[in-house]
Length: 134
View 1 (cartoon, rainbow, N blue to C red):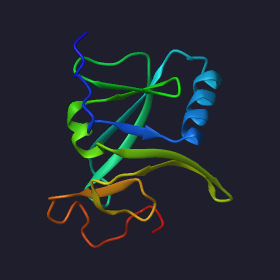
View 2 (cartoon, one colour):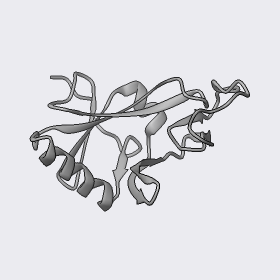
View 3 (cartoon, rainbow, N blue to C red):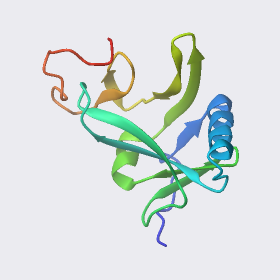
């Protein structure tokens, strides 16, 4: 497999809470050797949206970041939007979920599942409802 060499600026940080939550998910799904794929795709009310999935291994050209015993796989295009982001897990009375603090986003959807990256004109937001309750 060909993997991109990680540079100092091409990184994603997981909080301790996120690491523990991912470890628990891997054990619950009985896939302790899998990693977390984090990606960005077009869509959402702000133009780009975040996605996550558990995968057995990195793909060719993926950035592979290991933190707290967790492997994070990020494709090169997504890394352009996620460089220096922090992934956390928050649990609240309204429910829990992963939260991405992304320094590359100039604005975000009310629920944090989509964002407008720097340099993008108006994102995908058309002025209508967001759909996330924001």
